[in-house]
Image 1: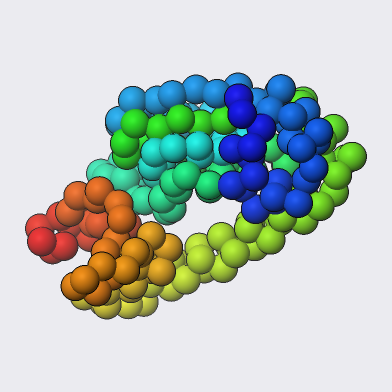
Image 2 (image 1 turned 180 degrees about the vertical axis):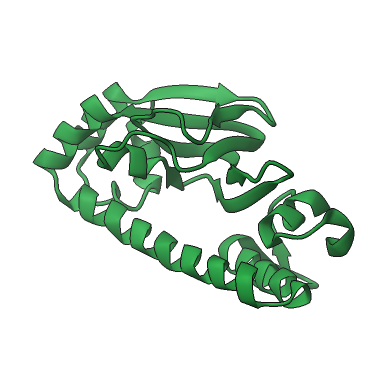
Length: 193
């Protein structure tokens, strides 16, 4: 793996080239096809995933349908909870929305890197706290707010996270179906349509 690809991840951007080369040595790169599962809720896991390309959804299976908690793309990471906690059971599942290439870092390789460079851990914790704040907003949206407002808020959040300026305004640069939006808002596809 090219060590310079790791610079796209905020918690690695301050590291020197030699240190990035060390991380790249323990990074296993894997490509997943569209719709492929990466891991399932409840499974044991000790890996951190860095998204090198593609789009990945983190979701929980609500038996009748999935609830999408997050969408990650190039430059994002996930799996940090299983990596940093002693509890190794995954709290959610991960599946690709499109063909994706991931860098997989095992706990046994990553923890020594954290000990020698604690700035990495601080970056991961900052992102984890932002995600906790977003999860709290999602809980409020799903339990208190009407469907129309939930859909509007998801569209605004997607605009902030994945929006690119275009001649007609802001384009959400993700290929999402009506079902994806329904799974993000806790409603039915027909309602989103």
